[in-house]
Structures are given as structure tokens and as C-alpha cells.
Image 1 (cartoon, rainbow, N blue to C red):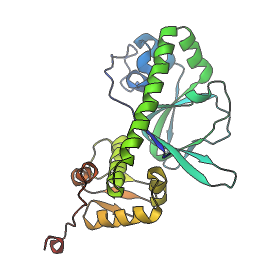
Image 2 (image 1 turned 30 degrees about the vertical axis):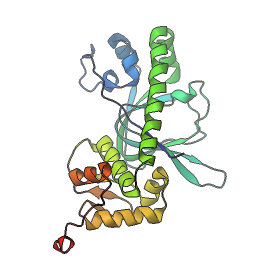
Image 3 (image 1 turned 180 degrees about the vertical axis):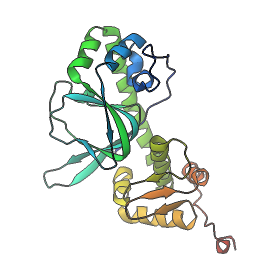
Length: 254
């Protein structure tokens, strides 16, 4: 099974009574299960950290004592087998939480690393558990939200599985660019082709061929370690249609 892509949906939010404009918790999908007052109580227990690209939040096997809520940026989740081979198992976009799967303070079963610069809110397990224990209804709603989140990720993977290699690659680049940078112009993603191949369950050679076609069509600029999107509109057309991209040079139109 391919890597899961975890995305947050848009949620209607209530103004935070702590009146802090950057209160990410009030808009996060996970915390929509709590009242505004509870969210602000939790917020007082939270620390914030900023990470550069390719920095590790935690490694597989580290003690899992905290929850991590991604405010900005993009994370990749990986596991390492006994031979030392690393495999990407998921991508995390803003508004989603890590660490809820090991509230018993067990060791992390995967590693989390930033793909682009990221801002993360960090909360101790025991503090979050105390809030949920005081709010049984919120705890039940939280479980429902997490189950729905997993179902959404699985549906997205199935959707990508029905597409051609070009459509899969275009879709993934758009998802990651919009998650990391919003709808800004010409976003750059520090992703290697091998990473994209692992996520989409394609060979590195197939991704290289797709990138060559995209580059000749003027959709992207690609180096060994990064991809820069030049034309979001045309790339979206490739993701949504079965027709291959056409080169933008005059010779291509003859």
C-alpha cells in the first residue's frame, strides 16, 4: 500500500477567547472536537518550535511523550527496516496531529522529518489526556474525527491509484505545493525523485520520464533534489485529465 497523505479539511471556527491571532489550535481539525474554552486551556500548555527543511522531529524508536500539531510546512513519515532501508509511509500537511497513536508513552513506530521549513505546536500526552478525561463527549468526537481522517487518506490513495503515472505525479505535486505554500506562485519542493516514486509506488525511472515530459512542456523545473512548479494551472489540467502535457516550444505545435 502506498504512503498515506494526511490532509486537513476546512473547518468553520469560532474566534478564540484568548484573542491570539495565531492560535492554530482553534482552526485545527483535531481540536474542533473541543469547546473554545477547552482549546484555550490546552493552548496554555503548548510549546512552539520552528524547523528548517530536512530536520527531524523524532526518530523511530524514540520515546513518544508528546503530541505534535503541524501549523505550517510539510512533514514526511518514514520507517526503517532491519537492513537500514528507509520507506516513506505518509505525508502530513498543516492542521494535523502526530503522536496520538502512542498516548501510552510508548516508543515511536516511525520517524517524522520536515520536507520544507515548518512550525510545530507540541503538547505533552498527559496534558491532552487530562483535558479529554474531563470532556468525555469531546473524547468520543475526537475518535470519530481521527477515524474519518484515516478514511479520507485511504480514499485519496485509491484515487491516485486509478490515475496514470503523469496524473499521479501532477496530483501529488499539487497536493504538496498547496499544503506547504498555499496557492502561491511557482512553489519549490525539496523532494527527490526517489521520494516521489516511493510515495506513488512508481519506479524512479518512470518518475524521471514524467519529469522530462513536464519540463519540456514548461510545467516544472527539476533538479536532483527539488522540483519547482512553473505553471499550476496547466499542471492541474494534467492531474485532472488523461491527455499528456504538450511541449510549450514552437516546434511542438508543428
